[in-house]
Image 1 (cartoon, helix red, strand yellow):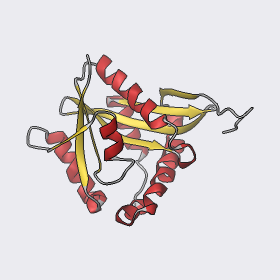
Image 2 (spheres, rainbow, N blue to C red):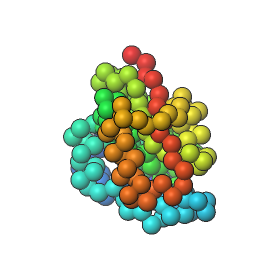
Image 3 (cartoon, rainbow, N blue to C red):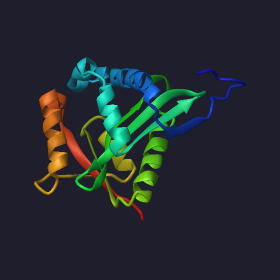
Amino acid sequence: MAIVDGTEPAFLVRPARTDDVPAMQEIELDAARSYGSLAETRFCLDLPARSAAEHAAARERGITLVGALGGRPAAFLLAMPLDGHAHILELAVAQAVQGRGHGRQLIAAFEAWASAAGFTLATLTTFRDVPWNAPFYARLGYQPFDVTDANPELAEVVREEREAGVHQAPRVAMRKRLRG
C-alpha cells in the first residue's frame, strides 16, 4: 500500500468476496508471525490458514469482512452464529498495518452487523495471556466466561481448537452484550 503525501490510504471495511480468500489466507499467516515473538505461542507459526471451505461457511452462515487499504485486503474478520450468538471465528490484521485501529474497526463493523441481525451477544475464543488478544478484547468490552453445556456449538469449537493444538497456550472464551 502506497503512502501518498504522508497519508495512508483510507481503511475501508466491506463484505469479503470469494476472490479475496487467497489474500485473506496470506493475511492470516502473516498476522500469525506476531505469535513467534512469544515462546508460549510460537507453535502458531506452524498452524495452517483457514481453508476456502471455512471462509465459504462463514460467508454463507454469518459474515466475512475485509478491511482494505488502497483497494487491497489488509485485514479481515470471519463470524457466524453459534448457540444463537454472533461468534468471531477469526480476526487478522497484516503485520505491516497492526496497531493502527484496523482490528477495532472490523470489530465495530461486526458488532453493527450482529446487532442489526438481532444478536444480543457476541462471543469469541482467544489467547488469555497474549497482550493483543484477551486484553485487547477486554478493552472493547468483552468479558471471560466459562463454556458450559448451555453452549454446545461453542464447546465444539473449543474441542476443535484443542484437537488442532491451539490450546498449547491458555485460551479463554469471551463475550459481550450488544446494544439493540
